[in-house]
Image 1: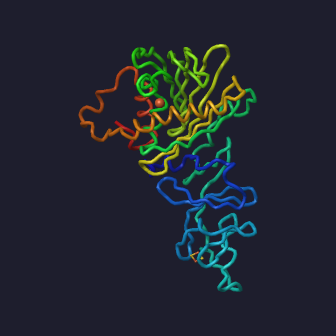
Image 2: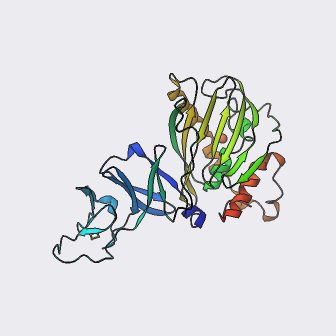
Image 3: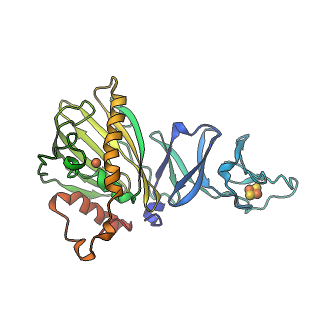
Length: 324
Ligand code: FES
Ligand SMILES: [Fe+2]
């Protein structure tokens, strides 16, 4: 999965912008590789965490006068990744190959995004980002020992609510039948028509509500949901999933809510921590590889429509390892 071109050429969230201070150097993992994330002159940059001289970790170095200094022999690199100084022979020409291996890095919606291939498209839009009616709350990242598509499937799935989130998003004693809904596929990914569910504690106010969900997945690892709770109350989760390794993912959640602003921040945080904390052991415990091959295509049911179409879409995009 992490080697697929569709994943390499996509943008992935690696950090919160506000947590990457000027002159900071941070080691991170993305797509199974060690990267160094750093900031200089206000710009965020992501490079392979490797000095081309003797292979030391640049993340153990430091930033001096806006340049990166390797911890081993002090070679310096400018923001473009060019070596500007070899201290042991300062007056000799610097070989052209003395360069850091750099990746595309951008900042958007309060996150640092990295593309390790060639970006096939822009970072997807965030529908509520510029709407001042919506308060924004960041939670996570929640770690999963699972493939990115499994994490995405989990957040696009309403049928697990009564069992994994009993007394909050559903009721185990009275699981609801899920009505028909449409899934449209376009150049903007997958989008559903509204899906209604009754929820005993449908949001951070912990009141019973009939919620109407709309799901959208503009990219293989970029699920989004919007939820209407009546009386113009609405919130959304923007949820980039970062493929750290093939079987290790991070789920970042940016919640936007247009109501109940006073004091809601702490309650939204506590609620998201509780809900995604309930999902973690279930998703980590999934062992699809153990399902007998000849059963894998048989056990989808009607209410799994979004999940079935999500897998088909991933296959079309050339994303492997997403299930049958
Ligand atoms: S390994 Fe980086 S300067 Fe030698
Ligand atoms: Fe869940």
